[in-house]
Image (cartoon, rainbow, N blue to C red; front, side, top):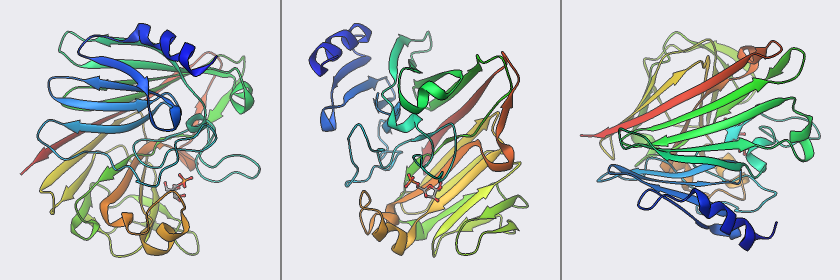
Length: 299
Ligand code: TA6
């Protein structure tokens, strides 16, 4: 379908004053959501939330100024959906194919409490997605908070295993003034240098070099304290046993063409999902919903 026709058909989901559909960067279809408390932006490409900002607050999400906006590349920043695998895979895209597919805009609605909900579906009509024997939907609900729900139904007649992770990039004033709380005592896979399994000994994690840790068997909320912006961010998750904490620091930042060399100062990833030993396993006909609620306050 050509972009103009596509856009016209997408506009059926617009809601005056709440949901608008337009052509975004790279000519990709973009949905913007306005509520009494916030503004959200998402692209159908990857069902990728690229912006969430509460009225009177700085943007909650980091977006790289060098990000691609192209059908064959992931967007750098916001909330990439890593699915149905996490990390590298020989001969296949890192973090799965979901963030490279154009998702179908299934429905939009204004809820009785004034929040606005956008529901998207991963169509199994092409490429690697056609090989995934499940129905996948993603619902983004915006208001004072941002709620993300990744819903998977095992429509195959057999056991279905997959990984899933909402790879959220948070905007911070200065990574040197950031601390992450809620992971003390949790075992993690340390992916920096020689891979190793360690246990978190700190009640607050601080950043002075590359950090790339997959915390396992943890269901607790994680708090991001940003002393520069004087903001506290809460990452609450449901049906998620894994939390990933990542900052690329200097060398990795330089090595990513879609990430500014100095952008590591202004972001931290706290990602919520089910990866590695926490991967999902659905029996025939079973379903799961990974849910994340992002909230913040200044002062
Ligand atoms: O979540 C951390 C991580 O797995 C890092 O190892 C790094 O690869 C990051 O994801 C970004 O991956 P991407 O494929 O988006 O460049």
